[in-house]
Amino acid sequence: MIFLFRVLSYAPLSWLHALGAGLGGLIWALSPTYRRHLDENLTLALGETAARKIRSSAIAHAGRQAMELPKIWLRPQDEVIQRVVKITGWELAEQAMREGKGILYLTPHLGCYEIISHYLSRYAPITVMYRPPKRRWMQMLIETGRKRDGLQIATADLSGVRTLLKALKRGEAVGMLPDQAPKVGEGLWVDFFGKPAYTMTLAARLSESGAAVIMLWVERLPAGAGFHFHLQAPRQALAGSTENRAQQISHEIEALIRQCPAQYLWGYNRYKRPAGAEPPPGAGEKTA
Image (cartoon, rainbow, N blue to C red):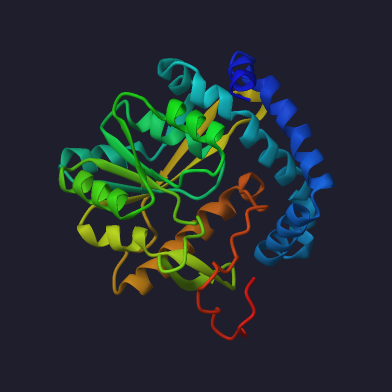
């Protein structure tokens, strides 16, 4: 599998995206569970009419996201960052760096999120959190793809949390996917597109450090033309308790997704209930 990834990394991005669109359709057709999650989540968030209009595009973009990974992970860093052809809102990062603040970058599973840390690490050190996959070959690929100058990875455990806090105290940047379903004890139930979703509290707690919070997503441009970075300040400053901040972040993530809903990973089981977690408000004891 690693050899295949290396071969694919040499293919033009437009070819990979074309293959990815077909792969996305194949997975949707062959996996009832994936198909159910994608259809249910799309309809819940956008309504049946809007969901029907973008369903085929969302299916294709999910495949494109998977097929662009060899290009992002295994090509030289200079080549990877040259794929970023447009940036909106970069002044937010520049201001935070001038002020010597730590920066907390929050991005959903939207667009080409894997390129974010590669690009940002060229301007300032950044530490990103990830949860090690179960498959050893995937673990090796992730470690290879994210081992770049200025880029440090922290595992999703207590040691990783300490690493993130130290980075922010040094005035460095930290990045994470706050819409990733956490393990039991690492989250709480907050609203996400009108339905309770078990949501990590770590992003909310890190926002209490005084770091500048920047919402960020990367748009995948048509025909392999590259990527467009979108940096935005939260619509309202995060404040209040950890629960309040987690809810605010969830709504900020919704706002980003609405900007380009076709590029969100709707097939991700965002509403799952981790084993051992209390049921969501208003639900019974059945585990999802």
